[in-house]
Each structure stands twice: as structure tokens, then as C-alpha cells.
Image: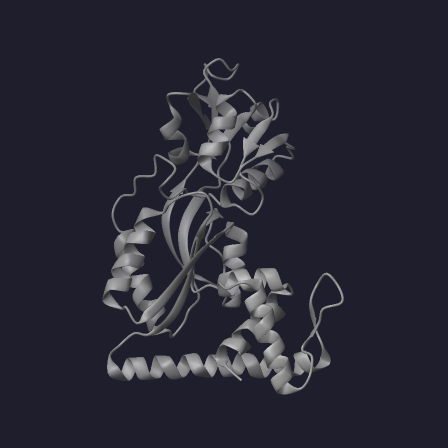
Length: 307
């Protein structure tokens, strides 16, 4: 029995799906399946019921899950203890980031950390902000860069990087283009293109509209600022973006302040309170990388309230 088999077992149990578990542990689905089958042969019982679309634990699987989690936690604690005694930071860190942008300061932090602590294996994945927060809470990710609506997630440590409002963006021939600002009610008279549910920016828009009992017609959704702007520039809908996201499209779009959106869109690093020395070090590098003013004017940089 190997620790990686226990890791894959826990991943399948928590994801309830072999494909998602494989994505989480960064190997192929066939590799996860083969290791789980080997583990089942070693313990002499099937751990999963695979007869339905959603994978569920058998009675034996339920009995094994707690012990598997405990074994993985003890193995991680052993590595940390030895690393602290020897003055070395070792282990593995899983980092999440919002979809649709290249977050340069985060990459700078990861590179500097890797140079200083090559014994730590770093994995990076993209997801929407809601899933990233769930992964951090569940221990599937150690650190994540997320978009938030108004406040950082409760129960997690956080470093807010950017806080700003929403804007509307329209092509210069649009009926709203001659104005400097609009209200949410003005926007409801037009189709809207915005980021999808699960993103911080969309949460800000939904909260603001719900507070005024407005139901905007969001006809188009895209996960990247470039896609949202391109759709608006073609006259298909009014784009809703954060202020810094919109400034890079002034050659094609007029940017209008939305007067009555009071909840800001945030971009933040989030992590759980932990005694993991590798994570503590990575957070320190993150603070340094994001310490200066951030240029958020184009896709390819952090996007507050984004995915």
C-alpha cells in the first residue's frame, strides 16, 4: 500500500468522480483507476460503487476513508517536522488561480519561492473563484488567487490585492456611448455580456441587481475579459467589467461608470490558517510580489472580481 494510492482514494471519495479526481491529482484517469484497483486488491474489498454516474463509497470505503485521511496527514506532518528541524522547507503545494488571465505577480512569487526552496513541488491549476474557495476550504488547494464580491471569504486568511467598482463598456455607436455614467436600471434595458456565475465580478453584479429587485438580461457569458470586450465591441451586448479590466479597450469601447454598484470587486490571495512551513513561506513571497502598485489594464494581468 502506497501513500499515493491513499491520496487517489481520498480524491475520488471527495470528488465522487474519477475524471475530476484525476484532474485534482494531476495524472490520467486511467492511472487513478489502476491505482484504486490495486488498493482494492490489497485491502481485499471494493471501496467504490461504480454502478451509477456518481461514484459512491461502499461500506468498506467509508470505513477506510477516515484512516486514509489520517495517514496522509501524518505523512505530511512527518515531512514538515523533519524539514523544520533540518532548516529545509519540503513537501508539495497546490496553488489555484482564476481562469482567463496570466497573473504575473503570482508567477513571480512562485518562481522566487521555487528558486529558494527547490525541495517543494508546486502544482498550479485554474478554476472559477467559487470552486477555488471550496478547494482551499477542503484542503484541495493550499493557496488561491480569487475574485470576491465585497469581502474576502469567511474563515480563510486573505490578502486583498485590488478593490474597485464595476463599469459598463459599449461600442462608440451605442445609444449609451455619449454618457459618462449609467445606473443598473439603465443596463436592464439592454442585453448584457458578463462573466459567468462562480466568478467574483458576476457575484458583484448579481448582488447589486438583487438589492434593487432588478433582473438584467444576461444573454452572453465569457470567462475572460478579452472575450467579454470583443462581444460588446461587435454590438451584441453591453459589457460589464471591473474598472481596470475595461481600460485596455478604449480604442473600441466607451467606458461608463455604473453609479449604483456599491459593492466592490476584489482580487485576493486566500489560504487556510496552517502550520505548514512551505505555505507560510509561499505567502511571504506572495506578499512581496503583490506589494507594489499593480498594472491591471489588460488581460494577461490580475483581474479583480474575475473568474
